[in-house]
Image 1 (cartoon, rainbow, N blue to C red):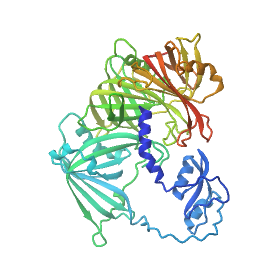
Image 2 (image 1 turned 30 degrees about the vertical axis):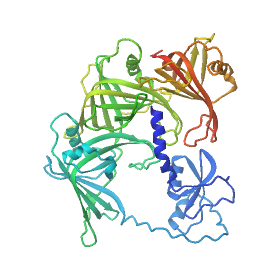
Image 3 (image 1 turned 180 degrees about the vertical axis):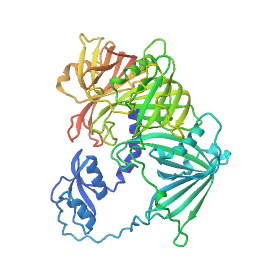
Length: 594
């Protein structure tokens, strides 16, 4: 499912890639290669051919480690020249051919163009207006995304707010909590948006009247293609708020009617200490001995079903307030979550299903304060998947630029409520437990290399095999989403509810395995069903858990050339590579722990 969603995102994001003002050249690097005026020659780590891009993009790519600046053209711009002289790039000689000067639209300077926003809410239950200085994005809603049912309630316009969640917005989160929690709906309020120029003056003010919050979603922005609100080069936690309003008016300012914002009321970026930095997750219910706390989840979000068919469901971050609560957690598989995996196994393996569980997710700031606590009640696991995240377009959880094995757990619940850091701070634990160590420091963390999943080992046995075939030469494993309808191979009549995908580099040492696979491809007697165990191995080579697939007798197999340069190559080399891909369909599935 994660891979399908990533492919969906790539389809959406590729037009953005093509619009980054990049000039591509297929010729090899030589003295005949010239960049247009104002652009920089770079070589990407995934492709030896040079390309030309603008100065800012080149500097960002080099900082991210995905490209190296080779040469810059001579320029009359002193600031640009000084910026790159520090790195001692040698300018290239301009070609002898005459190039007429191109007239380009002028760009307004920073003092006159829109640079930031201020948000003020008032009215309703508020006794006085409240100013918020840390919202990073305000976006008016467009007609295609308008939810028609709100029209009957008297709302004719809407807009979005986005930011890095931070302590200074506590009063706004209190309003969000009152809207989400099953209690009296808060009164409608007004919201005004000041759009500020770089000289602290207001360009326009958008005044929205009689508004209500209809969606609040925390999520992680981990795509390299986007600038981060925090200006850091790593993934960041964001939140997105949708507000529907009964009307909107605009006030315009000019030199005769100015509105200057004092320094103490200007927008600013919240510090790392007061911004959300990660999550701590608590599980408690009949199948757990007291309160079970996990500190190694890297991502959380309420979720909605973007695409739902009899064969698959694709979920994305979202939290419409009139829907049944559901959410997902993502992390690096690690041995500190063994108790949780054993609980997950009860949902997967045949037998008595486990009891529902209550889950509390704490959003924790850099200084250790709990900013929000999302309490989900009577939850059941409905999907657990693992995948190899090998896209260069996403930040890694570890901060290391390399592929990493990830896991995603999805839950459906009967209810939820939200606690926020307001007049009093949130308790360290959602419930008191006799085994909870109240003095223990609880904070989000990334599991150490020796403790987290690093590679897979496949064991194939049974059927026509006279011995167990074992290989750790499998670079990529992904389970096919289960319980989403029948998985029907085109060449087979049987229905299959389980399966998985394997990818690796073809090599002659696999001759025995290729001979075995050929029996399912070549015409002749159909071989007997076989079993497959997938061992997830930690960095210390110990088995984390074993995924057991039984009665597998359908195999799709092909080779292909992987030449997309937004993926890490299995070989570690910056060139295309031949890969092999298997899809195996099975009748049974279970999880075992060593």
